Amino acid sequence: MIRVLKPGLLTTVQDLGRPGYQQYGVVVGGALDAFAARVANLIVGNDDNAALLEMAQTGPDLQFERAALVAWNGGDFEATIGGRPLLRDRAVRVEPGETLSFGVARRGLRAWLAVAGGLDVPLVMGSRSTYRRAGLGGHNNGRPLAAGDRLQAFAPGEWATTVLASLGQREARATVWTVRPETLGPQAPAGTVRAVIGPEWDWFNNDAQKALFASEWEATREADRMGVRLHGPELALHKPREMISSAVNTGIVQVPPSGQPIVLLPSRQSVGGYPRIAAVASVDVGRFTQLRPGEKVRFERMPLAVAFKLQLQRERDLGRVRMGLARLTG
Image: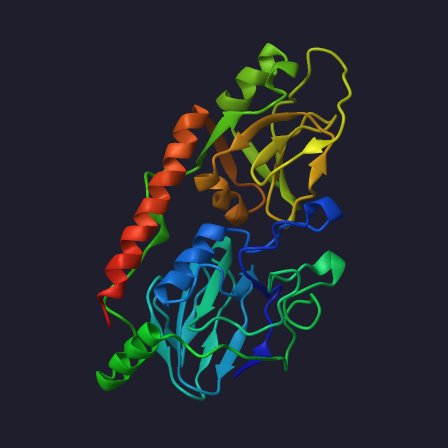
């Protein structure tokens, strides 16, 4: 049992989302950085899709009523346990009665906390993710955590139980090994995201096409789980043109009449009526979940085949890490 002493600004239960229901208007949603969530779960021996906590800007205070194995990653949230810094990207033992605290994000905006076994909230349409707009899923019908809430976790698996026992016998707080998400797969330079051109690329004039990849784009305050609006040069069409609403996916860069692009995130709508000038490579979408207002980013153009190759490389790296961890017990 986990007791919520302070909920943080916006802490929700998420997994990898609710695919398969977009034809009914139900968003996929799920953890905004699915890769970070998968790594956190991997570190504590969970399935990739296990439910975990996603926090934004200010994290929660959580009191554990029994020993647990946890791991967190994402932005820098000044995490502490018993007043001492909590190591990131590794499995940590929390003793009964201890409080795990996350402060204000000093870097980035979001972080993910996995508990061995995964959080036990009801499955709704195949997912435990919180969908706030519809009051669906997650903890207590789609709402963020509140002070006084109690969360249950499933029993940890055999591997996590062994790691937990090993740490206890050695009176160690955390494992000596670590898994840092940023070490898996070739990374784009800081402040850069890789992207491919989109279905309506040819609708845009030459200046817009050049500006997309040659300019710095500033993250604005118009950002939520659906997307992030960027500010920069106006991206104009060759001529005024309307389009029929078409399917959109996470990472799509669509351009409304203002000429300022919007990058869609996992809680995006299923269709959109704005031209899609580009799509962010899947391996870099998570960077938009950490952008603060005013931070700058550049797009780096790459072929679609290379974007697929990067994703495959990441999956292979995850597989190797998973096999390596299976041989470790602390």
